[in-house]
Each structure stands twice: as structure tokens, then as C-alpha cells.
Length: 288
Image (cartoon, rainbow, N blue to C red; front, top):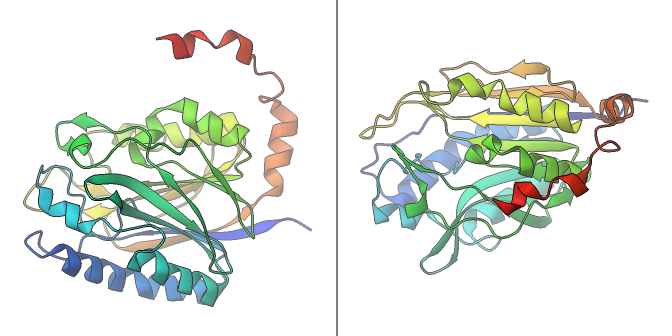
């Protein structure tokens, strides 16, 4: 019998004007996601992931310390606790990308991973932090310090890579070496910048490493910054690097796919990229 894991990605536009308070944003975005979570649960979805910093706008075009107020503790903050309840209710693994407050003045771009029994398993902190026009992330996020963890969930081994991380193949390979069967990449990316890479890099990671990838992007424009249009098109790629399910580019949507995890062994036995690696020759990569 094939090992099928029903998985889903949710892409949602920001719901409030940025003048609203952080708490109002958090409430509005969670309320926008709950019907999709309920729908996923009723469909029997086993793994679910939201977009990057899903509880608010993508605030990094600004350098406004107001947005520090959107950060919350993990796992003891309200959003992680709420999603633990939904994970248990629907027997569903949930990946929860939120702004994390580690301590006062120390903030990370993080995703919490919750198992199907509602138990918090751990978190991934975004390792690669951009600082380019419109994406002033170093003002908001400290670089991750937890490495590339893989979480052994009820349905499979889950890794997380967040947005800008996807431009770095080293971490994608590290997640594979650490045993990941699926990588979720919650993102916030706009047309005219990296759109030409959106359906190139992550399917390439999937093929090079023999695992599934779930790539999530938000939709719409976010005033007053208007750095471009978040073009959605969230998708799943299989271990052959083929996109097998994709959302639209301009509306709130949940994309669902049945992923056959048996394909991972089939592809890895065929290509043997892990057997044929030569790590003893790669030291120059870390000498730069």
C-alpha cells in the first residue's frame, strides 16, 4: 500500500490597513485562516502549512519598530497554543510561521512545528536574512541559531526553510541529510523580483535531494509600502522536481495534494545522490 500523505498550503492576502494595531492584525489574519483550517480538517488533511509571518502583513519594507509588537513567544504565545488545539482537533500536523520574541529585543522569523496529537515538537528559525531594497529584514530578525532540524511527525519527517533561505542550496541539502521527507517553505515574495526563480529553485531542491517541497506565498498588494504584488501560486513539487499542484496567483486559496511518500525511496534508489556525495572535497565552500 502506498504511503499517501494528504497535505495542504494556505495563501491569504493581508486583511487590514497597516495603521491597525499588531493585535488587530493578528486577530484578523487568524480569523481569515480558521475556515481553511476547518476545511482542511474535514477533508482529512494530514499536514498543513501557512505563509511566512502569517499573523500580519509583510512589514519588512518599513523599518518601523511598531512591528516588534507582532512578535510572540513560541511555544507559550497565543498563536502556537491555538494551533496546538487545532492540530489535536483534526489529528493534523501544522507548521506555524510567526514572528518570534525570544526575549525583549531579540526577535526571529520562525516556524513552530506541531504534531498531529497537538504536541509542540520544536521550531525552525530562518537562517538567511536579506537586507535589500524593500526587504529590510535585518532590522527585524536575528539570524537563526538552531541549524536545520527535522521533525519526526505522525505522518513523516518534516523540515522547514523560510523564504530567502530557498536561494541557498546548502541548507536544502542539510535538511535532506537530516532525514527530511518534505520541506515547507513559507514565503513572502513579489512579482518583478524573484518570480522567475519561484518555480525553478525549489523544484530543483526537490529533485536534487529526493523529497517533496511545499512552497507558500501570500497574495495581493500591501499599502503603504507597495513593493509589488505578492503573486501566490503556492505549490507542491515532488521528488522528481515536478510541480503537481498549484494555487492561483491572485486570491485567497488552499491547495491540497495527495503526496506519495513512497516516491522518495524510488527516486533516491534511482539517482543515488546521497551515496555519491564527496563531502571531503567540499571544504572550500566553508572557507570563503
